[in-house]
Figure 1: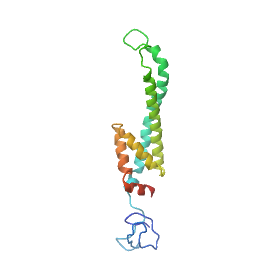
Figure 2: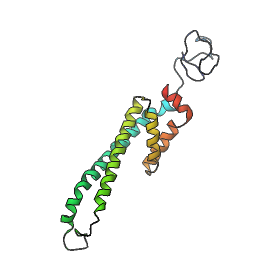
Figure 3: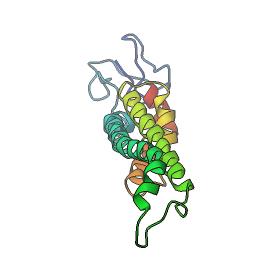
Figure 4: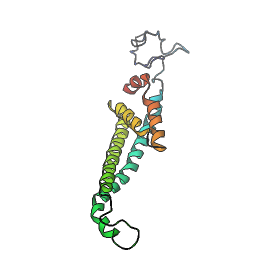
Length: 171
């Protein structure tokens, strides 16, 4: 049995909830009877959808990160040979050498973010204790990734950030 007020588990002989101190009725006492399942809260309703969205977000970040990291690691060797020739193309001496390194670093950042997103989604599905904190941190980081990252970040913060969400997530 569970408390109508806070959803705490109750022993059959208890008449007062140990968590919220509310008086509870016996199971057959009519409209004030204790339900057999805890109340459905916001975290419980949205946890699976949020987890799937984080997994999809990570899966979408990984190919771009791989392309940038692997492609730009080899670009510094390919660009001077491709760019040589007539026309307004960059020649070997005018191609900025920092560009492949910068894009490669962005690719590594995308790979890390994609891996952490998938990890957060799987951990949310398994109700790991640290998954809520990881998802909140990733949600804050995703707010600058307009439009889909912003939407996912706002949704994550709406579901997981309120103070009562922590107690509900642990339950």
